[in-house]
Amino acid sequence: MNRPTIIGIAGGSGSGKTSVTRKIMEALDGHSVVLIEQDYYYKDQSEKTFEERLETNYDHPFAFDNDLLISHVRQLLDRKAVEVPTYNYEIHTRSDRTILVEPRDVIIIEGIFALENETLRNLMDVKLYVDTDSDIRILRRMQRDIEKRGRTMDSVINQYLTVVRPMHLQFIEPTKRFSDVIIPEGGENNVAIDLITTKIRTLINN
Image (cartoon, rainbow, N blue to C red; front, side):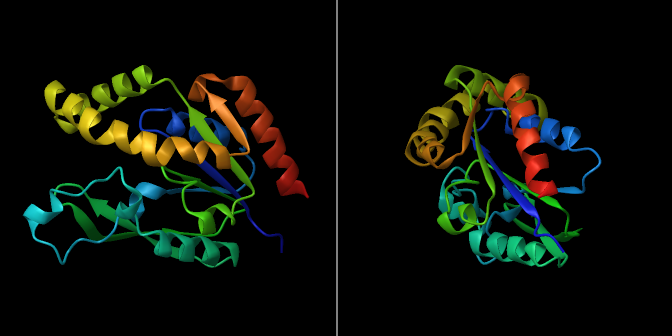
């Protein structure tokens, strides 16, 4: 039985990672593909008070339970199913609900820190970094947080200036150097996505 092909897709908040991931999955129609979102692996904070949880910096690598994520990826590589955790943003900790994920021929790991952890990177066959200008990223984040999360414009801007931007420059942007391919402009770059999916098909067939 062939080893599954693992694709890592990283990039800043609002860079277009989700659009790139969706287009790659659509292009690989006919192959069995599963998506593992790194956001599912925020650390459990049930031992903390609610006030302490409110201080969580979700844009820092320490917010993620990489040990569990790596363990699950290795199980999927061994063709074993895993129970992926979910996160409850209202109470700022892991929920009781899990998602059963079956092994597939292609495993896509998508998240802002998908390329940050060396052990996780070393499991990947293809590493992608979605690179989009900061003004586009903040506008996309602002639209998402205001429309879908009920945030005010002032709160989004304040969070971006005090947390998101510094964390991006310190932790996310540097992971670009670990990528095999940098995709400018995210999901709008159809040429890059076509080239990448051709390479992924080659890996699967081999």
